[in-house]
Image 1 (cartoon, rainbow, N blue to C red):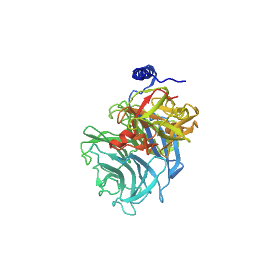
Image 2 (cartoon, rainbow, N blue to C red; image 1 turned 90 degrees about the horizontal axis):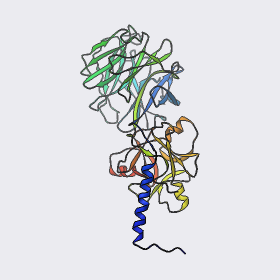
Image 3 (cartoon, helix red, strand yellow; image 1 turned 45 degrees about the vertical axis):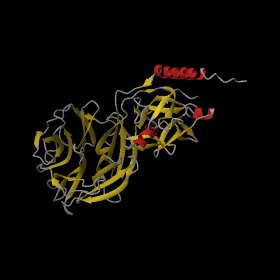
Length: 445
């Protein structure tokens, strides 16, 4: 027969259990990151098709793997030069060239950068039916304004191209200003803009000499000063489609297409004034054409204890993360089966070891992952898509404890809603913060 403990003993035992739990956590190894973990999304058309967009991603901005071939085909026309942006509403947007001639550009949107929906074709009102509108590129200024910079000729493909910009006049990017000339002389195409401090940097192709050149200004409308002309970087001629991304260490990487030889290259710079030699982009050279790369960061470097662990909800502290019928929930875990279902082995992230993955203890071939943003317990397939969806990067808890940001979709967090686990776009309200915060505890089983 089991005898109850005297009341005076119970608090002492609870304190001893608490101290033991803290000791386990403090002495356990942790999965750590030096800071936010980068993830790079790339949209491109290919040498084999001007009508289908392909999506790739990378952990290091060098080695890209295909997320989806033929990820988007517009209702009509082409999809050359697709440029990708993550907007403040959490959606990914592309803008692209719609045809060799004409005065339109196309827009599409995606929640997950895999499945895309046509939005609209915008007539920029410049060229008429005989002109050409090419290579639209997103540019978000430091004041938050969103622009599309494109190259246009009023006399068609053989004409003198100049760069113009339109500016979003609505928060949902559905309405746009009239075109405004950037102030760059003819004959230049493929403008790609970045801003550092108060200086705008414009990397663009001299259509006469076929070199990528570099101009700077203190205003989007100029005047522009060319600071790198001819073969200033030593990359040679016959290049187009420059696109830049900033790396976590502060360096810049420029990508460009050596279209005549069907080869793709990149080069790095510490200051945008001088670049290193061009390096061929392994795996994409010969396949991809005129792409852009979007860097996003997940987590903040918060360390997560590894090994067997359980996750308790911060705002529903009587509930833990558990799997049931291969779906994720936060629920009370009273019996042994529930405690086993609420125990996971924290391991280095399947897609990036600076983050973590959560492997089931009682089904050790299965991991928590999101699928269509619902969290499931699925058997590891070994493919890159599964690895990305099963990888989470920790942050200091939005409402205490820790929060877990999706590696594959930065800005989306592991959270419970109606007790179901999801990966949802972060909102600023206190409810979301509580739903997305968890305490990592000693294992329940």
